Every structure is written in C-alpha cells, then in structure tokens.
Amino acid sequence: MAKSKHILLIIGGGIAAYKAAELIRLIRKSGMTVRCVLTESGAQFVTPMTLAALSENEVHTTLWSLKDEAEMGHIQLSREADLIVICPATANLLAKMVGGIADDLATTLLLATDSPVLAVPAMNVRMWQHAATQRNIAQLRKDGIKVMHPDEGAMACGEFGPGRLPEPEAILSEIVRQLGGEPGSAGLAGENELGANPLDGQPAFAPDQHRPLHGKHVLVTAGPTHEPIDPVRYIANRSSGRQGFAIAAAAAEAGARVTLVAGPVHLPTPAGVLRVDVETALEMERAVQNALPAEVAIMVAAVADWRTDSQAGQKIKKEGAAPAPLQLTENPDILAGLARHEQRPGLLIGFAAETEKIADHAKAKLEKKSCDWIVANDVSGPVGESVMGGADNSVHIVTGTGTEIWERLPKAEVARRLVAKIIEELANV
Ligand code: C5P
Image 1 (cartoon, rainbow, N blue to C red):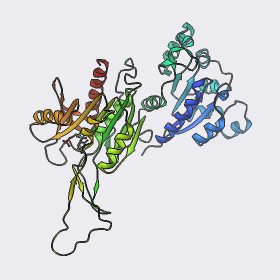
Image 2: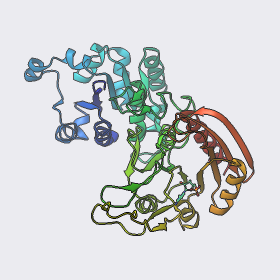
Image 3: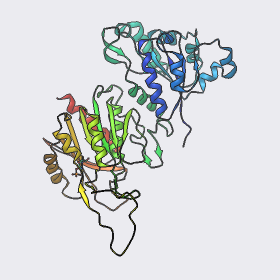
Image 4: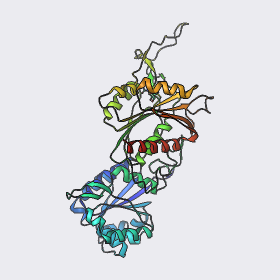
C-alpha cells in the first residue's frame, strides 16, 4: 500500500471559507492527511481552532512564527505536500499569485513550492467576471495551476451567477483526480487488493462538460446481500459490487450527490460518495428508502431473493443423519418497491443478471418491476470467467423505446457510458 497522500490546504478570506471545514473532513475520511494554512482574512471567517480540530494538525497563520520556522520552515511546508489546494481562492489571492507577490505565509508558500497547485475560486459574480480576474485565471492556467470552475447559483451576497464554491464532494473528486488517484490517497485509482479501482483514474467527463449532474441526488445499490442462517453462516451470491461502485464513482465525477448503499464487499469508497453499508436485503431496503428523495436510482445490487425464515441464535449443530432444514421466505423487491413509492425517483434503473434470452427477459423485467430502464448482463460462463466478480461486462440497455447492446467493456467504461446516457436523458426531460 502506498503512503497516504498529504494535502496542504490554504484557506483564503471569503464567506465560502466555512466549506473548507467540510472539505477537511472529506479529505481525512478518504485516507489523506491535511495541514492548513489560514490567511489573515480567512481567519475572519473560520478559526484556527476549527481547522486544527478537524485536521488534527497544527494550523499555520503567519510567516513570522519563530516556533513554526524552527520546527518546519515555510519552504519545507510548501514542499512536503503532494498537492496544495487553495480553497476558497479569492480574487485577491489569485491576483497575487499571478504577480508573484509573497507578502504573507500563503503567498510565500505558493511562490516557493514545487508541488502541484489546485485553486478553487469563490467570489462575487462580478468579481469573477471582471476582466482582471479572467485574465489572471488564464495566466495561472498557463503557469500550470489547475483552476476549478466555480458553480453557478444564488450567492451569499444576494447576487446570482457563477462564483459559488463547488460542493466539497466535487472538490474532493478533483483532488483525487489531480493526485492521479493512487492507492492510499482516496482509493480511487490503481489496483487494490481486490482489483482495479472503479474508474481506473480516468476522469469520467471532458473538463468542458462541467459537472452536468450538479444538484442531482443519485442513489446506487451495489454488491450482494448476506442473509444469516445462524451466527456464523449465511446465504450469499458472487456479486463483487464492482459495477455498482464504478457507477457511483462516475455519477460523483459528474457532480451528483451520490448515496451508495453497499452490501458486504471489500471495495474502497469512491471519492465524494456517501456510503451506507448494509448486510441483509431488509437493511438495504430501509437504507434505500431513508436515502430518498433522489432524482435517479440505479439498483445494481444482487439482492438475495430469499432469506431464512428465522435465524438460529446459536450455531446449528451437525447432529444426526439428516441435515438441518432451511425454511426460506421471500425478500422484498427493493426495486419494485421504489417504483411504487410516493417519492419514486424520476429515472429508475434496474439491473438484471441473466444467463439466457437476455433481451427478452430484460423486457419482461422492465414491465414487471415498473422501472424505466433495465441494464441486463449475461452472467453465464464458468465461475472465474463470468461477469459476476470479473472486470468486464457486456450489457443490453432496455428502455421504453428500444434496446442498445454494449459489447464487452471494462466495468468502468460501462459506468461512464451509463452516466452519460443518464445525463442525456435528464437533459431531455
Ligand atoms: O428479479 P431480479 O433479481 O432479476 O431483478 C434484478 C433487479 O431488481 C436489480 O436491479 C436488483 O437490484 C433489483 N432487486 C431488488 N430487490 C430484490 C431483488 C432484485 O431491488 N429483492
């Protein structure tokens, strides 16, 4: 496992500074460490105490701290980071960076560093649109600084337009992308002990298609369910969860707020995704309903059709000649339940694992479960070569208007294409 990544977070002076606190929480949750530098004006909006408590690291505020210089000089501070993130990056900070001004700790670090820098601007719409700011941003990009696009919407100052800080989940996704998503960072890219990461480190969308699912809540289920027989045994299936995790990652990359209800799998949580772990079908049903409302739901989980009638309190003993009988009862159909729910997601997508007559069975399932699309995959084939648990998938997408066939593709690519199709569908509503 590679060493965990380290972020140096510079917090500038703007009302969006309060969102840096949430960003620190997300960075830490994804396994990275973070050290904060707070500018003088940033300290008007958040306190060093908040940042120190969340980052569990000392917060640096001034160039002129003898103690800090003795322990870690500002040059070292600027170089030990795998990535420097400026959030929020104010118009003033951006302008100083362009001019190479170094008149406080933050700007001195930025001039001294050889680490990559990601700036996350947030400011009033007119300040953002001002020719000076736009000129500065163009120059910073030429200088190799990655500058995120701000979001559009109502602003704290009462105006409306571009200039809002992107949601912390989206900033975290960008951080992971900038770091190349190595294992030990946010677990997004590279191989882990269970196989490839959900998106293979590739961004799901071209930068010009900026976060097309922003403002949408996407609910995804993934993995198998385990239905206990006794305290040590359970009924399960071979689902690995990889396809569902890749879809959750692709939706988050596209800017959605994503809730991933995951059965028992050993996969890292994709960046920017809220994961709810469950074990049984009944727990999954509850978690799915608690996550509503959502604009889109994609039910990828291989939910066990049956559970044991009752669970033995003690391990069932191998006594006598006859094996202990298992009384089974049917699990609720979570997908069909969502289709009937008063908060039914506008776009409801089911998956279907089939071993024959894939398109016919998928069409029948679309009607039976009253969902909008069925993504059917062929899970025939010997264990180990099958789609279930494998890296690739071949799917039929059955909608009310027709069927598309996507021949064998990596699961990450199926995820990207499916999310692109969802974006197209939402744009047409
Ligand atoms: O009926 P079948 O299991 O083939 O349907 C597959 C689809 O239905 C998947 O989207 C799966 O997540 C969903 N499903 C469910 N609850 C069940 C069984 C399946 O949500 N109990």
